[in-house]
Amino acid sequence: MALGVVLGLRLDDPKEKLSLLSRGAEYDVLSPQGSFKKPTYPGICRVFARDGKCLSVLKTLFTNYCENHCAYCVNRAQNDMPRVTFGPEEFAKLAYDLYRKGAIDGIFLSSGVLKDPDHTMELMIRAVKILRNNYGFKGYLHLKVLPGASEDLMREAVTLADRVSLNIEFTEETSFKLFTPEKRIDGLLADTIRLSRIVREARERGFKGKVGQSTQIIVGATGESDLSVLKTSLWLYRELEVSRVYYSAYVKVNADAPSPLGPFFPSLRERRLYQADFLIKLYGFALEEILPQGKSFLDRDIDPKLSWALRNLHLFPLEVTKASYEELLRVPGIGPKSAKRIVEERGKVPLSLEVLKGFGVVVERARSFITIKGRYFGDRAFPSIKWERLEAGIQLSLL
Ligand code: SF4
Image 1 (tube, helix red, strand yellow):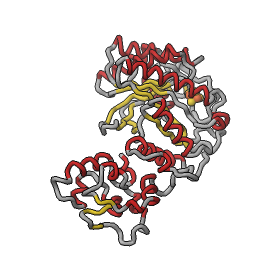
Image 2 (cartoon, helix red, strand yellow; image 1 turned 90 degrees about the vertical axis):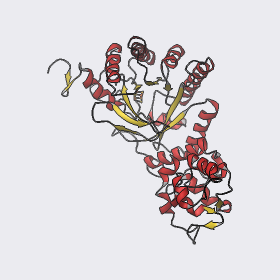
Image 3 (cartoon, protein in one colour; image 1 turned 45 degrees about the vertical axis):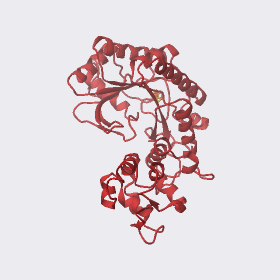
Image 4 (cartoon, helix red, strand yellow; image 1 turned 60 degrees about the vertical axis):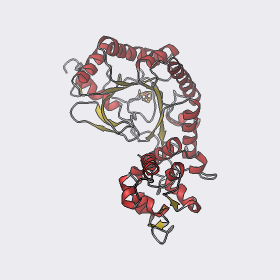
């Protein structure tokens, strides 16, 4: 076998390395809407930013060596697979070439643990420094901070990246025992708190005012309830000012790993959790409104906003010509943009279902919950309407 060739891969070729390392980063979440592979070059994904812009991002590991044994991960130490590491200069050059050619707008760099967290972070930071300082890379950079890394290295990561993330993985200690022998909830929370303090200090100094911090929670691997996950997210948003919590549906990637657990498929739970998260963060709902006492899991068949509306039918139908912005936001099918348009425009144009549609309202979902100048357009059998029909617009209403 030729030197550097394993399973047909030329592991001394940066592009082949990238092909392997980008596959190892597949389960790292970049955006609530997911990311879509761009077939032109390994590791390049398309993601939608919050403003709707589509960005090309190079998403890869720095190394797929790992000392740890997380049962939910393809890169865990005991898996027999080709292992490679970028050199700092090698990665910087590869990434900058793609950026210079316009193939990427940004980079998401994660990693397994080579020797120990500090050693790996030092290599990653060296690569990113070459990229920023020597090559003049000005694109977006999301850098993973490895649990257990020193405070000095966290600080360096914050000065170089636009976003840093440290995954807390689970919300209950029992899940850690089952899935990841080297990680502990108290250790990860302590690291997350430390990182958030460093991010806050950087923001206060006016340095990179927008540097953000995110984290990722695995959903459906254990019996952890949606209530437990959402309580943790709320704490992260409110107390630590974390910019974004990503939910990642558990996928059994190792044959000997535990099977998914929970009331329904992890992928649907992931979607429901994002919807609940948006309702709390962007729509002003309280957690208790989404999961009232005695309810620990979100509904499988209907989204959390519709579920809330059905529990509060006494508040509907709502007269859209008079309702406040906050009241409109609570109507299924009306989001922040369409609520704003209604409030801004209703004094200027007569409202109708067509006009509301033009404002971005998902009329099929909203019509049973509103009146326009006293006229009701919903199903006469409301509320025993066919809710599946409303459910069809679920994605649109929350984006
Ligand atoms: S530490 Fe990260 S890369 Fe290593 S096994 Fe765990 S999840 Fe995978």
